[in-house]
Length: 393
Ligand SMILES: Cc1ncc(COP(=O)(O)O)c(C=O)c1O
Image (tube, rainbow, N blue to C red; front, top):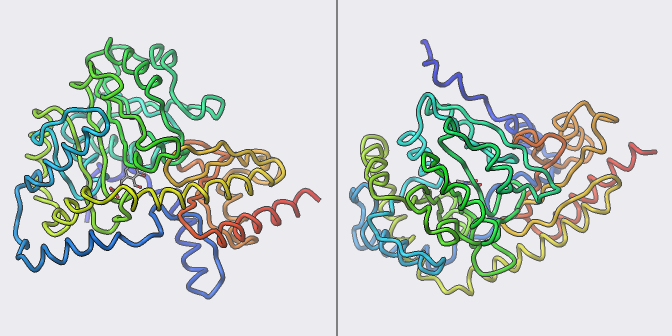
């Protein structure tokens, strides 16, 4: 059977080799500590599960409107007032996870001839989704010196009439860096001078922000670019609901309607029960999220301190999300050809799985998710420390 050319545009994830090797070692009974998880290790809060059960009992088991049930679209719109924005429910659409929301948007907005700037380190699905839409992307490497963030000067220098899109992720997966309100306002001022540019603002981790209640929002920081921005958010990370599959887009009604048309011909609505549970999630007491956040913050300090003690390794402090992104380039090429070889060594010798930075466009770095227990963080980093120290002897 001949495969469509489209699928050959997308490379298999380089992380897959490491994670599947780690899994098969675990199946053989080998004690592997994995820092690969992209999901909270908490259970979904009970009140959300209860709302799902109640939805089932109430018979909410049928198709819903494609862009989502009205109470959910209303609750999301209302939730955005706490980020300093006025959003109307018809500017909101829910999809089968944030990834699906982003996919719908790339399909609706980008095509052959479009060039999208993606600051790296980036989340792995952005380039793949852009290529699947037939568009091209330009990798814009952002260094640890600027906390892995794009500066307005850099953006200004890059933007010309050929650039039609930009993707910003804050808090970032994989670096945990967060744009301040001032930084977003400055980037916004540059974007406003280039009205052909569509910005995707991925705020999937905005409630997991350690310096305040919610990480700053792009449109709230620069309202004049509201018509150029699509904001993405979801329930997976904040509410420990990765398996429930629910994310959403906020954007101009014209784009939301087009995305809804696409969704109507693909998945239709996200699961009805999940949508009712999500309404309950948005009613949750802040304390429930704050408790999870406090645990993540303590783990962040634990992992960053332990990583910094490894000879040659430096690690910027993440301000959001649940990933540390240390620099291991001290060991490359002196001991390993690249970060993939280093990750393989750490898996074989230290029995620790982590994701090489090259997967995120940042070779030499490693991503460690700290969505795991203190004891495993301590033991896992100690194993890495020991394995690398043995090389220096
Ligand atoms: C930056 C970022 N955006 C979007 C997503 C998509 O999340 P989901 O599809 O589970 O809502 C993820 C998940 O890992 C992510 O890290």
